[in-house]
Image (cartoon, rainbow, N blue to C red; front, side, top):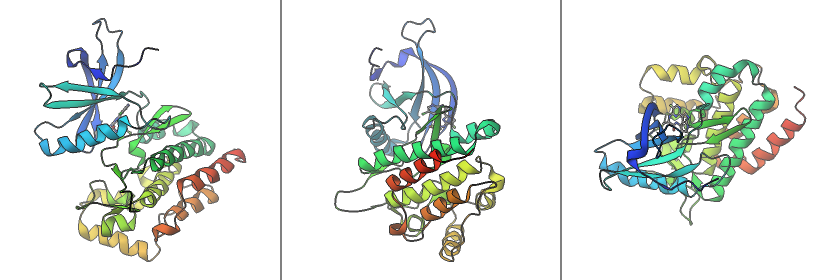
Length: 294
Ligand SMILES: C[C@H](Nc1nc(-c2c[nH]c3ncc(Cl)cc23)ncc1F)C(=O)NCC(F)(F)F
């Protein structure tokens, strides 16, 4: 197979439709069609919102991040496309037609059993283990940011908030409140804006809950109640941290195997150092897949 060009010419990128809005850019489905005969490949193109120069530096960091990642459980970087001279640039990635885990689980709920949910969970673990080995914290791990490549393969996507942990520290501290809904945030990320591999593990626990509730909002009392009022308001954030301190946690999803719920609770240990690592979670899930009776 020919090596993909890492430089895409704008004139050959044919817009098809908008796929969705990310942290500070939107992702469009395009066909890269240099021959002009519709035989070109479909690609997902992330564009920076125009005139948000401040984000240009962030966007270039995102491009640098994703272009350095080579893992089957991470969405593939294909290249960049410059427009308006070099003023604007877009990130070109592989296009996965099945879309995000949220839409896939809602649509295919009937024929996805717990064995397959565990397979997806183990692949997300693999991707996160790889990310950790590169000293990256994702900071926005959620089912909405997982893509479905096939019925037996999922990939982590959207590295807009990903940061590198400094070599002399165990965490990354941001200077402002987080951008993504606090529902996925570990307590220390809400109260101290601290992000680490262990806060990614907390978010992984939430993703496990999303998987085993097939991303149904009805099953996530906290998520539903937060949709109404302003999700990022400090009072909501402090309320959430307080009930977490009093050991409230999300209830087990319907029909969720008890040992999977136990794993979620381990990821939601209030103190970050009490949470498991992605490698131990991966091992645990692997044994569950082997002896899964379903
Ligand atoms: C902002 C963009 N939103 C969306 N993307 C896609 C999508 C389908 N197929 C895709 N193939 C490659 C990419 Cl990069 C995205 C899509 N579908 C619906 C969306 F709302 C996004 O990146 N979301 C994160 C994640 F990719 F994990 F879904």
